[in-house]
Every structure is written in structure tokens, then in C-alpha cells.
Length: 548
Image (cartoon, rainbow, N blue to C red; front, side):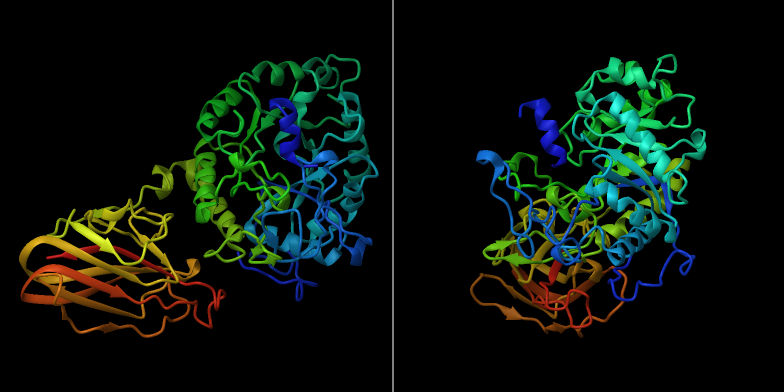
């Protein structure tokens, strides 16, 4: 059962490592791998397959919205998720799989897992010993996400915490917060389904059945859903709260604009605030009517926005929703292009499969700088160095032969003649992108002008499958009928391992009287053979057409 299903009860209804070769690799073998225990990823150990478990588990998820929810997926190539995992339909009971996951988490810099737990003796519970052993090898700690298991109430949660601490609390990978009396950490999903007075019976120090001051004392974190949850958190005796959902504006807690005030309230009331960042959300494979909750990944920009806001408020923990909740499309685990019949799964392209692992590590490295106020990114991820130039073509008419991708439109049709010069980041809003198609446009200066040169900028960022054109052709005309072709500029094939860069192409037109300028830039079509995305669709990114 998924995260959103329970909420609907309330609201109305940095490199990829393959499995082979990781048998002996661990944190001890890779001392450069550093993990941060204050960054916690929600982890789901509920997957199974016939090879390990005798059957598929969760990959064959049911489809909600039909009578008795009897329709389900078959597993294999046909799974209950909008994305498809690079590791295929794995089993959470597979030791080698767990090693691979811990290695990926370590490379991402994540030092703490919050493991979905559905009660004593559940499938997820039986995975815990294997998971703890794998986590220990990579210096990763494990805490628990207490789910709404059968007949859950405050007393059964206290009993569950006791069971977990008694059975797993002595393991080296079991998390204890050194900042808070070495206490374990428990997230309580859907905590609002139990009244605050009932929670107080185990969390209030003066209650007869309290866990406070006992060996089962722990940091107990509630889920903040609706506005005005302050009394619930205080009256229930919780140590803090988290937001979980990776859907901006879905709940009060998951709305980015509310995080500063939530942080301020937590600080004033000595509570732990754990904002949860996520890369996006897409669950229509199992909830076909859920289009309104889709949050597009926007080629990583959605994840960046979440992380940047979280870092600004400098919370004691940052949650990541999620490492591998595939059903809701919140995973940062590597995904690959895949097709099942007529259904084409989503993927991260043009980003590489392991992009979100690498991007997580980047943001974790920024945390200290944000906390100190010294980060260059403090003014926001969209605060790029912005150069502007005035030229003869500024705000003139341009006609395109091929349409740019709407996700990369540089602000619209005038984006290439607005005077803004793009940086080496394709996210700065200045670039128009063309996926596997050429760039061809005609600029009309509206009158004949004597020109000296024409310059056009192109971006290359091989990490994002963006390459320089194979050649540029420029033609000039006075009447839009007869065109004079200038010498073609050809490019060598792109070389491997270059940093992102902007390359200008300059055409001398001294002494030429011109009104119309026609430009053709040839897309290389597919990524080069040496590239991790070899054969995949290549992007061509063009910015300002500067006419002097």
C-alpha cells in the first residue's frame, strides 16, 4: 500500500556501479566515500521476485480505482511503476542487491536510511538483518519508518519500538542520535490517524505507559499534513515532524513556501523539523486518475528547487523521498528506458541513469556552505551570472523551421534575440533546446542594414547529452528570395570528458548589406559511441544570435 493512499483517507478518498564487481567493495575499501547521517532517505524493502522469493512482490502491484482493486501488473517487464529500474525486478532479500543499494547510497553521500516497516514478522521486517549487515559495510545507519500496520495504535507503536530496539538496537548499523541522548529515531507515517491524547499516553513523560526515560525512549517524529498541526505535535508529545510527500502544494507540510515558517516554529518550540525533498512524483501506472498530482522532474530542476529551499533553512535533518519508492515515481535509484507492449516507461533522459545519485551528493556537499552563508548558490539556483548585450537583431522577428522543445524555450520565440547571453548551465533560462533535430531559423531585421559580423552561441554539456553542432551554415539576403551563402563552419566530432562550455561561431559580413539572415545548425543526431548514452537522442542548445 502506498503513501498517497493513506493521505486520501483524510482528504476525501556519483557513478553507477553494476552488481558485478561489488562483492568485495565496501566503505572500508573506499575511504573517500563520505556519508552524512543527517541526510535520511526513505527506503522500501518490500520487493520480491521468483528467483529469490518464489513470486513477485510489489512489482506486480494492483491498480487502484477498479472494483475490489483486482487488476494488477504481472511483473517482469510489466510493473506497477511509471519508471523502470536499472536493476530490473530485484528482490529486497538479495544480499548482492543490498550491497549494490548501499554502494549507490554511499556514492550519493546519504548516511541514514528510514526503512519502511510493517510490523513484527512482516516481509519487510524479515529483510532487516540482511539490510543492517549491508549498511554496516558502507558506514550507513538505519532507522525505521513505522507504517500503518494492522491494528496500529499508540500502544502497539510503543510495543513495536520495543521489539525493534530489542532485536536490532545492538547492531552497529542501528541509528542512535548522539545529539539527543543516543536515542533511536522513528518516523510515524499517518500519525494523524491516532488522536494526540492517545500519543500522549506513551510520549508524555508523566503518563503511566510512557517510553520516556526508559530503554525504549526514542525520537518520535510525526507527519505534518494540514495547516495548524501545532497542537497535535505538542499535545501528542512528539519530538518533531517531517513532511514526507514529494509533491509541492499537495499538503501544507510538503509545500515549499511553508517551510520557513515551519522551521521557525520548530526552533521556537524545541522540535525537530525534517523537510523532505524529492525529484518529482508520478504514480498514474497504479492510480490512473491521479494526473493532478504529477510533478514533472524538469530534468532535475524540481529536485534542485526542493534541496535549495531545504538547505536555506538549515534543518537538523533532511529527508529524501525516496530512494526506491518506484510505485510513486519518487525514486532517485537509477532508471532506464524500457517498453512493455505499447507502454513506454518514463526515464531520466537526457540525464544519465545515475544522475539523481550524483546530484544528491552535490547538494550534500553544499550543505555546510549554506549553513555558514558562504555558498555562491545562496542567492538561489536560478541566480546565474547574467550577461546582456545590445545588438541590431535585438527584439527583431525570427521564424523557425523546426520547433524548439517547450521545456527549453529561452522564454519563447524572442528568446534568441532578447540580449541575454546564456551561461554554461542549460538551466539558466537563456537556451533553446532541440532534441535530435536541427536548428534552422530566419531573422528579419525589418530593414536593410550594413553589418560587420554575426555571432551565434552553442552549448555543450555531455553530462546532459548536449553537444555542439556538426556544422553551421549561414546565408544572408536583402529580399528573402535570393540568398548568399557564407563559408560553412564545420566541427570535429565531440571529444570525451569535456566540461560544460559555450562556443561562439562568428561569421564576418563586413561590407554586406543585409535584411534577412538564415541559419542552419546540424544536430549530431545521436550521442557518440564513447558516451554513456551512445545511440540516444542528442540535444542541440542555441542561445543569442548577436548581429553587429
